[in-house]
Image 1 (tube, one colour):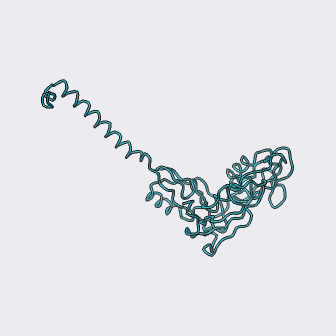
Image 2 (cartoon, rainbow, N blue to C red):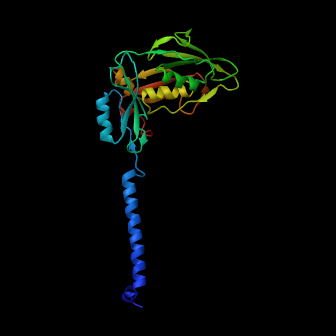
Length: 262
């Protein structure tokens, strides 16, 4: 039987046409879905730090993400109105259209109340401080049965009572318990991280930021906020005692950041 004879059979012909129609339909749907969702494609989150709100919105539009104003804090040495912090951090890979939460610097400090943190875990206390517009400073460890449980909340070495009115952005230190049988942690990988995310991750790992070494490219506080870690000590993954200080070297020169991170 020839191809022409097969094609002349209306049952076979209609079956072939139906299969072809289904294949075309499935292909078109897949293409449209891929275009609509950008399936499998990610974009890099731009750096919004030190940009004004209007500048950040323009950059976001150009780069395919959205920005929302999540919070504002007062940073004395930073230009008023510019972005101080963002989540996700610069360089993170996200889907097109992802929302980036921005925290900007206010013109004047807001007044906030000191929360009660005693009995909280370190991470709970850190989140509560951020929610109240306050900054976590140092982690001070002392022998106790419960590791990372808050024993005291302090400012300048003095206990501070809940309800005390403070300026937004005030630094609060936490005195935490440390059980001798549960007192070790691992140093996170900080190379390639921006200054503020690096500090945040250091604290999240129950460690303190020690010396900060800025190279010649960092001339202003705004530069320091934009700077990236290019060296750290102790090294990533090293096991150390909680409360250990981590020394960070920072630069705004991308060439100094190890290529492995990029």
